[in-house]
Length: 304
Length: 324
Image (tube, rainbow over all chains, first blue to last red; front, side, top):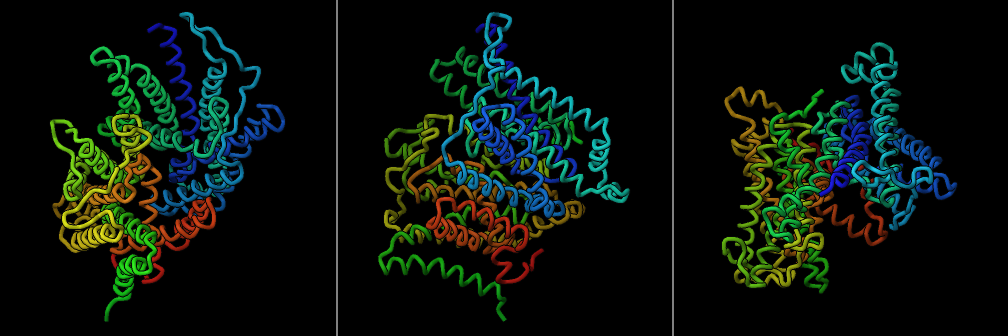
């Protein structure tokens, strides 16, 4: 095993982590401020990817597609909030789970209606095509590095937004006491819609960015959604810092587990068996880690 | 005077029995299969209803137990068919009672650690951690090639039951129907027992329960295990119905559907799961006949039920549930 390969896998893990952060940040923000569990967050991710693929293929520009993905996901999020989600804030979690599960069915089947069952493809923009060389002699896709950079920029931007701006102050106030900030004359309904649209836009951005790496298809949001749940459960629901650390942790553990476990087991087991056991174990690894963390810290690492 | 809910419940139970009998008489065996599907899904949801309806434990991972039950049937039957012993030289079997016993035992044993860890949390954490455990088992099933991996596991013939020809649709339906009635009796028994009273108190006010000297954790854990076992039994029957143990039985969509069944019918009610399963299969069959995209409309209906008709079908027909 060479260092280059190891670095490549570490970067892959980081890229997955950063992408999960974009999803988890929105989920955790929505839960923190509105106390709502949103299963349909994966659908917003899918909407972002589809919007980007469609606009990019119509105009030929990935960047216009990216803007479209942000706009489409934010708009879908805002509409969803106004039409459905708003009625769920006072309901118990069971109702929220069911209503957003219903939204998944509607969005998934709806987009299958519009776009068909065949996947769409999205090309990496020319500027970001190609690879950079890594220390140790390996090559790494420039685009994946760009995703990592975008993720870090978003994390920083989100930190500044929440800690330094008036909107951020209102979001924090909403997290600690919603009746109080409503009493202070702040339009809490609009605030909720903005927070929801912001979370949706981040999910849409994640979908568009990943859409260029994988194919864009119905149901692409669901595996990511569940990973994002694992992330926010590990990090502590409602905590953006927890979401960032949880996302990086999950990204690295998942990628490195798939890479290292079969190799490690090959030292003690015959090769074919090691591959099988290692592969099965690696796919369960993050859930095992999550169970361990929750067994000791039932409210996650950075409980709000 | 007999309560309206009792009358409706009796009608539902008789209706489920009548459809296959009539179908048999007029030679439409397809409706027997459809009714069997209703009975099995209702059985799975009765299991979940013990945790969700009585205990307020929103498990979003009951597909794990449904699937484990299915795979128990599939794995035992495969080994018996190939005449090769399993781990520790245990022989496979195609006898339903043995398969049920194994499904119940394994689900109970798996539910113990999952429940013990998950029940340390509550609310959203509980929902997500049960979901994550189910995903863990799902990914294990699709990445473990020995029993079919992503392709699932076919059963070459339906498993057997002493003295009954299970290959015919009607006898198999009657087995499932009998088990459903048995499970509903268990649900009623639990609800009326001291244990059930403690479980419902744990849902409503666990501090008060602890104050009278009963540990809510233990009560919830036992309920979770019983609930998992009943759902696992349904899984074993489901694999026998389709002659196929599929990884999709373990998927999180399945967990969602089980919750949907309960909510469509009416949460925490004895006949809620049955009413929900009947409605669900009816939607699946009628809407599915009109359009391939029937789940789109299912989503709309579900959204409507959650937002505007919180008591489900039974709530609509029989008024508010008497047990809060």
